[in-house]
Image (tube, rainbow, N blue to C red; front, side, top):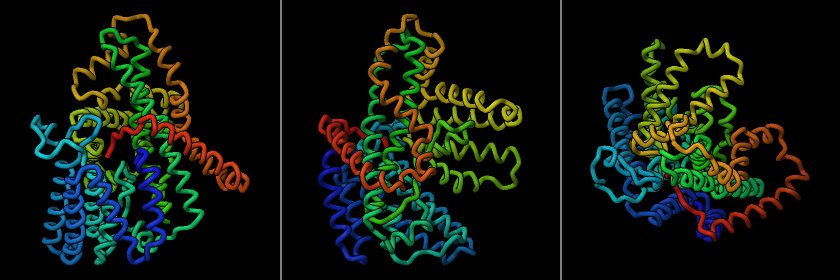
Length: 458
């Protein structure tokens, strides 16, 4: 969703066809478009798409019919097993090409290309069937409704992960309007500029830093690199989620996604919640809450461990995700143990500690080999021999503007402006907003023409 063909060919063609297509055929058009996106990337991605849709639809009906019997649990177990297998076999990242087989030290049985949507569709399918088992709603017998929810292609990039009960009515009765189109275009442009201007720039900063060997890496440069990778890590997901909401809004569907402000957090749990709200809700609802029974300390630790570890694999089934999730589990467990002493500290002190520790563990997500991550962390604390830090001034000079912009957005500026209803100002919406949207379109086009279209998450 971040190349020139998407912006100037797929987007206008699909939007035009969707708006003129009769309501009874709109869901079929969305499914066809999703299949087309997958085929364009790699036709093998049709396998997990078919598996997730069929398993969700059929097992959903079976679970509903046998929910009060042992067979209900059997069908739910099969549904989870099938979708976990689809996730592990087909989900990989373009960042390092890693998948479940490479995590085990084996060559992949599947093509090395990323299967588009393989990180989102299994989670949709499992959530749908688990909620049916929990009697949250009855099974949907219209195949196209279930299929569109599971394979809602705007979310293929990096979510947001959707809830069926909140999406069903919108999928059946989408309400396109000029107002929603305006919101959709605005969110698309904001998402694209975050991807092209902030995320890609922070990725370039990270690569500039890692071009220096850890033995000669200056301290300030090492901390700048960790900050740059953290911002890349966050804005990659945030940008694709924002674009997904924009595309859905063009279709008359509201995904309910707001730009979070992770830097407003004062705990690791809050940081995880704000960094990726929909993934946090999914792991909390379907992993954490399923493990938490009696609420004792041991069950809570187990719930934290499994929910964080499994949620970490969503970012890529690789050793880097396992290491980062393990570091997060340690931090969140220590945070829980020291909950009372930490609450006595001033908010600013807790905030500084959180950001400091978050940047310290970030190299575990950046490097596939634990030894390389540890060498980099050592350089952050003076392990490198180079005491002269001319590289940090170079990096700050080159990446100052996108970094400052990213920090401002991470502090929740857009959420603040939305709460103040600034976007509802008539003068802003009728005169100023179209001008800056067109300016963003021109800027995004310039970036895309220059080749700034790399994709990391799927």
